[in-house]
Amino acid sequence: MTEEAVKPRVRTVRTSKSGLKFSISSLLLIIFCSFLLVISTFIQLNISHLGIPAEIFSGRDLKIQDYIHTFNLIPQVPAVMFIAALLGRKFGLTSVIIYILTGLFIMPVFALGGGWQYIGEYGFGYILAYIPAVFLTGTILKNGFTYKNIFKALFAGILTIHIIGIIYMLIIAGIRHEGFMFTSGWILAQSGIKIIYDFIFSFFAVLVAKYARLVLWLYM
Image (tube, rainbow, N blue to C red; front, side):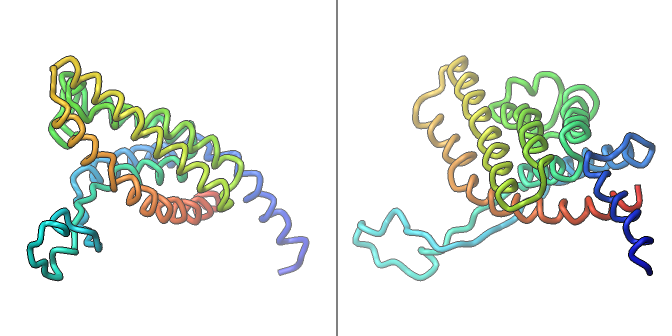
């Protein structure tokens, strides 16, 4: 293939970096990503890692398995980062909003069910935070998928989800007059070590989205 024949093809791919164009194909992709978010809600990854047990100074004889902790990760946040990276800001927001509206008014697609009353659940703030998280992540990645931009996008998106999720939970806990032990334990479970795993899995999710976009630019 001559150099002249290659240039138009390369130019087409480059100009498509402004984002996917609305079409039947992109609409199906938006719906697919909403469904992907539903699937990620009900997937649980069991991750084992080394850790220091709380009983280390208790004088009790510890075994090897006492130093191994198992963490159950529900990969919703990596799925959100994948959607933001794959679809971009505008279509990513559309996909996430479809997921939220479906859970509130159509089907119980959230982890603990659904319905408009779900806004009173402690964890709904994390779900609601998907909207600004996708906006920030998509905005940063619009400037390119360099490692610097990826890390900036993940930092902004993931921290937005956890910060808003924690604030929302504190508001609900305050309304219900929950005690400190319950509140701190809940926050630690939802936004403790989970943040680290969210960063790790989201990084690989964005890399997959990066190369998936190249295919979409060529065939959509």
